[in-house]
Length: 77
Image (cartoon, rainbow, N blue to C red):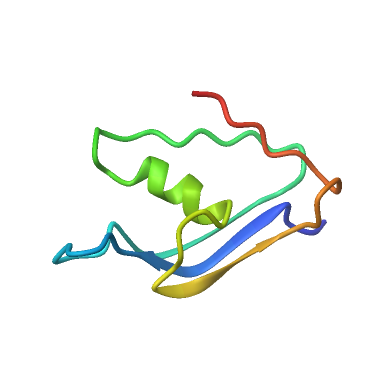
């Protein structure tokens, strides 16, 4: 089964930050798989979702997504 979304060696930094928010993240989400991202305030949860959706650029690594309409990625606040 192919991944709905896959991150490989994903690192993301904010402008002016000393350290990256995300460092070398690797994972995949399969179709119909339910995933919850939890962590303390400021740990990078929103940055991870934004990077996965292509809203913030990655410093390193890549994100692969199935084409639109091939699957749904629900975001529950």
